[in-house]
Length: 317
Image (tube, rainbow, N blue to C red; front, side, top):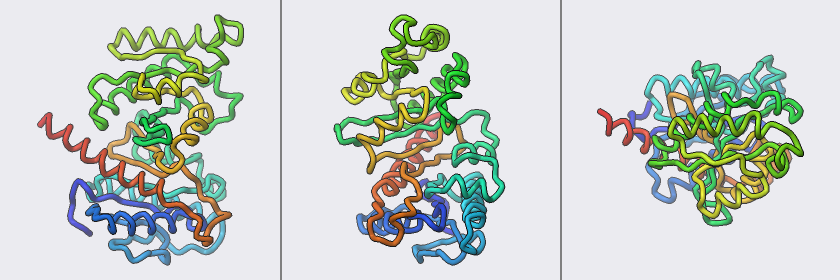
């Protein structure tokens, strides 16, 4: 094993049929060419060791979808154990295929749910973060609900959920991004934030009570703000982060301005976890078209957040 340092990351290759193994290898080679001294423990199928240092195999891939799902999950579990043991200071996960997890008999829908289950974290958050975007300014978007059908979102949203996610976001921005007084925007659910109840009652019934509770707790939050303006205002510097009520209302603007630089960060875990924001992209495997930039960004952000985390802990020792 490599020596323990604040820059040792466990990196999973993701689904062995996807572009994960390609972009992980390309990203690490590129970072090393730039003089990056981060240490890595790569985790994946036995036969996919890219020869870039320490490698931990989790079994042989037999070419089937269930095998891809099993090995993807095993790699995540192994990376988590490395982080919990202190061997790695954070983890970066390659893209997985949710149907493969289902074919393997796993109930989790994705990385976030899997990581919560393995670690026993009481609450987690899915934050999309880009410190550079096509607009220049950073953009950070927390998804209050994640991989659920759109028709289920109104029933899942509650004032308690928005409050707990906002508090998690605030503490993470303070601890890991070193933002002293985070300015948080709450994106509305309905068109025009319901226009006084014309297009739904969730803004009055759920969002405004949550904002009141958060302000009384000292959180600097504004909302509900219509989705057609809140992201532009954030990119213009009014807010440090946005809480989006459902997956696509947050992901669509985020990927539009940060497709190559965006990173998925899981909040609430006992270690740093990041991943690229793209999927397995089976259709371009082996074509040379796989872009490693999001994986590079995920590795860089994990290393940066690890340093911020240790600085924060050191300040309280």
